[in-house]
Length: 160
Image (tube, rainbow, N blue to C red; front, top):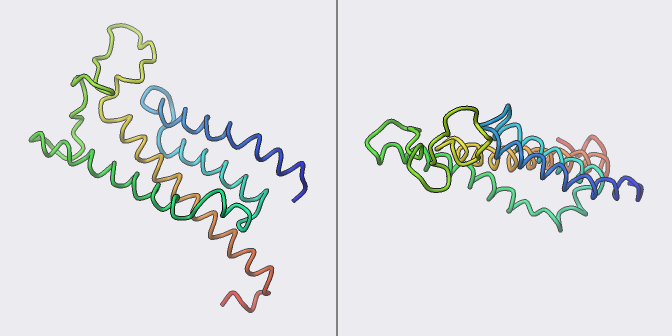
């Protein structure tokens, strides 16, 4: 790719990452959430991959890190769900609501001022889903791009 495309991708990726993180963290207050935010961040990854190619990007983004990201999201989601069972309630019971701490403050009366710490278990689940979607979509895009490059280098007969 040309230097302009690579420079633009490097400039736009942080904004895609920040915007995706914003969507994930504000998912319980605004439209959006873990899936949408994870998809936005994975789109930034796809932009970098299209600009640099899988060979050059493998030094920056490790496949093992994306696998860990995917597994960590799934693990956080399942463990948060089992947290309700440990409190004698149903799976995915909102056991963090009104419990204090990071996500468990009570919602103020009147209009919600946008406090991030009022969602109970929902923000934690959004973060877990965001990690899962980021890892999974990024790996899918990575493998598709790697396979497309393999076909271009060796021809269509090498794909089978």
